[in-house]
Length: 328
Image (cartoon, rainbow, N blue to C red; front, side, top):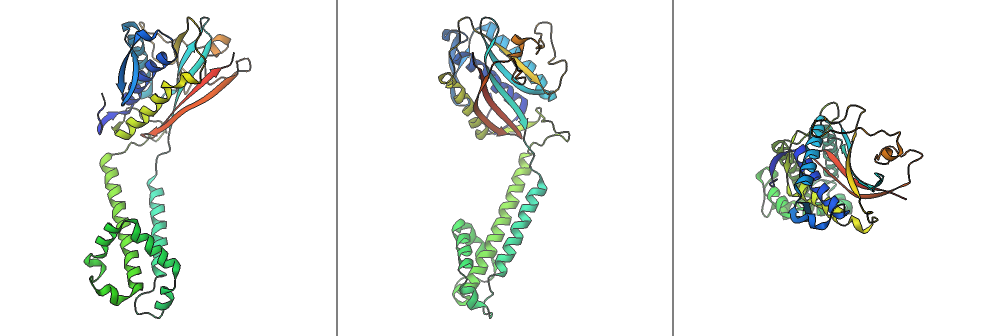
């Protein structure tokens, strides 16, 4: 069980979530009698999990195969397909994973450089005390507005910076220096405060050792991530969406069943097949088999109704769940 703040393997988090999601989908869609499931909790969300040893073992074998392919970076989509008594697909719960663009350091540097430049311009517009332009500066309502914003943003921090010896003398000198000097000192304090926050952010990022994709653009699912309450909340949100999906889906027919389809990024042999748990390739030339696929909406395929469910992003990946309902 994941603990908040623990360093966990990304593929373990994904597979643990998928296992729970499959159990919940089977319950919500009514593939098996409700008496076959028991109440439990995951990510702070009430769920139902199957308690039949055969079904539980079958789902665990599926998850083990998925984990092996995740670590190789070969999976595009994972589909839980509801089938009627003839083997035709009724609907599909599609989990699609894609890589988010890594945040480049040069983008951050460019943005901070622009902020520095903007602040230099702002400080140059504030006249120094006892200068010829002091009256013009005091009449600059735009400059006053900026200084007021700086003060109201975080008064405690700004006041601490203003009282710093590096910022000049303190105390009653503010009244003697005049309003222009106060504006200048507050602008300088804002700049120092922002630089301190920048340094704190960089140190925090270094301590967390954030995940970055490989150079060839594949997600490294074997990488370590920090399991936080935010990640837990994102996964919980998807489970809550799944738990109410029966309200906008048609009831399943009698003798319905399910299958799990893994759609690979590239054509190949598919998941490693084991004698006790083989994977069967889907032949898209067969109409009944084609209906199980979400990526080949062939001309002869039934119309599909796409229902977006939830999209979350964490650890440089985007996990999207949508439902494809076939119209009979």
